[in-house]
Image (cartoon, rainbow, N blue to C red):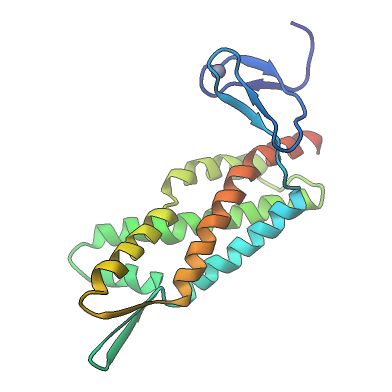
Length: 201
Ligand SMILES: [Zn+2]
């Protein structure tokens, strides 16, 4: 085995390989277990930073504007993500409100904030203060961020309630749909790029 500064370990079987620079669309596969080792990213750090800022704005819109607009015989009500969690907290199932608050507001918000922090410094060609801690926290937050589950739940609620009440999707729901799409791009593409950039800095 010759000397190399840039090793990569297969996360599925712990085999060690030499890291190779990949072009956009290229993928390196583990020869032992066929797991994906690396993927060439078509997005630059500037583009990922711009997408992370867009996701932060969409996150604010999704929390500020109502996701569902409900009306029945002249009486109407609007529900935002915050008001849904608050309504749960005031009911008999407070622990569910805590879990919902963490999964649809706290974890995604922290995830987006950390990505903006890390990518903002990477955009300036620097490693962000607390880089390793932030990267570890991002990995730990990933299972707790459940915006997609929340979106699915809201869509099911709209379909179910539409037979009984006048239910209209709000601006917050549009922002939530876009946020789910943008979050998939920025969280899946940023992690490997940030580690790669950290090696250079
Ligand atoms: Zn492997």
